[in-house]
Length: 80
Image (cartoon, rainbow, N blue to C red):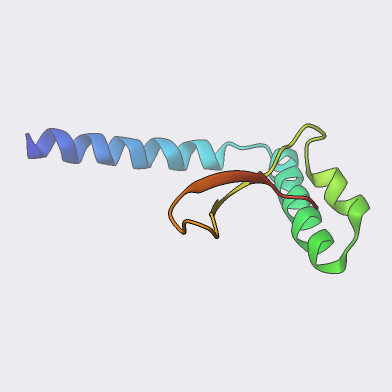
């Protein structure tokens, strides 16, 4: 049983490495550009960069503790 688990783990690692190596350079560059637009746009307060990085229908949510009960959790919209 251990040999089968070890083989499966090795196959998953080898497969994920192969997929990462075959990603087109333009796709990789697009991912990096989007991440940088979001992070640098947030820190610089540049809304145009953040808009490029986020989908127009994104609804960011956050779980928070209710101040009255300190145990009930609720979802609230995060306004950017």
